[in-house]
Image 1 (cartoon, rainbow, N blue to C red):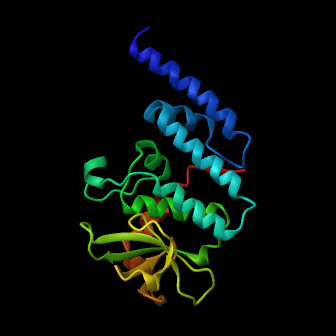
Image 2 (tube, helix red, strand yellow):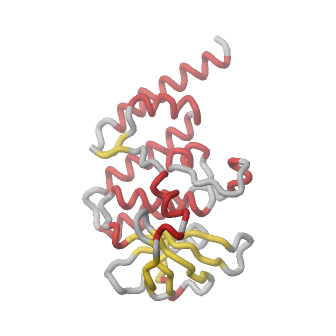
Image 3 (tube, rainbow, N blue to C red):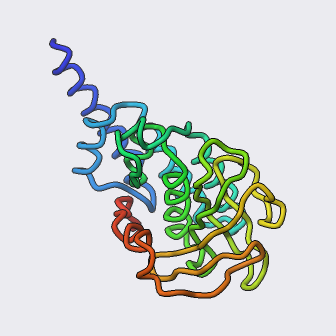
Amino acid sequence: MSKINGFAVLCFIIMLCTVGISSQGRFYLPDDGLKSYAGKYGELAVKRLDGLLSLMDGLIAESEDSKVIKVNSFYNQIPYRSDKKIWGKEDYWASRLEFLGVGMGDCEDYAVAKFLTLLQLDVPQEKLFLTYVKAKGYADEAHMVVTYYKKPGTVPFVLDNYNKQILPATQRNDLVPIYSFTANDLFLQKQKGLGKRVDPSQSKNVGRLKSVDLEILKR
């Protein structure tokens, strides 16, 4: 059997195994998506995807705190690499499937993946923001994190791939907040919370977030 045919058979077996696992849960990838995913990224990527789907299914009935902690930990296992090294581009926003597929990513990939996953786990959108910061003392100072507000008007917690411990923003003196956004809103950022709301059309990233397909579906 040729290497190409052997790999195709292996991918097909992986696909069948993955369908068997994911079809039992709330979160899944359509069958045609699984087939192309296995063929494009291989066995390890399928295992990473299965790990995410299993995690999401297991978190459905858990507390909001548990969802935030475990989703943050899951994605922080993935190694950091710059967009230039992965995609040959200075700035590229990978989808969750691309992030898991290549098994590496930059700060936007971690932040967007955490943000979308927590939204799908029914953490209210008004509690979650993607936040651009200046990261002092790091080689790449332009950085993105997720800020999570347990209650409106309180100091947010920071979900970060540099410092993997979830801490209040007031304890992250290495981060200087610039602005926060969702798919619909843009705010100037303060260390202790959201600042002035501004026109979201001023940021190209609001539109970019809308263009990142969820891909993972929920029954």
